[in-house]
Image 1 (cartoon, rainbow, N blue to C red):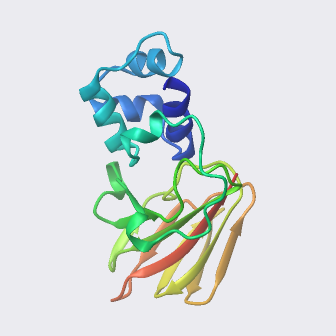
Image 2: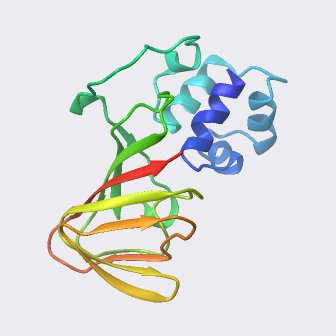
Length: 179
């Protein structure tokens, strides 16, 4: 169970400290759970699953389906935002967390009039996004870029330091994190 929890936590770019704060345990407890030194209680396991936006059963699967090719809209998982991003955007993971593919697919919805003082992911790998609708200003490496519907972004080693939707409509990205 510990290794699976660690995998889901890292896939979301969440630190042990952040997960522990959300669950209401110490970072040491999360570390011990992830290294299988201790096993979480059932209530703690439910809290961990909720904060990682996964079904509790996913912690116990030994094998995954051979190949899933269709993911229904209702199966998307809302990623709960904390800190300065809370209430400024909605992030929905469109592909399952427990998928062993090379990408994770998201729908990122930045609300009108909202500013994000950092990137919406703490991810340190390649990622790309396509703006489906709206317009947003993005700051990356001290340069401000206006991103309009139909534009594509690609980050290999850098991440934006700020996002701003000063428009009257949501800025909606189709976003891919490449593993």
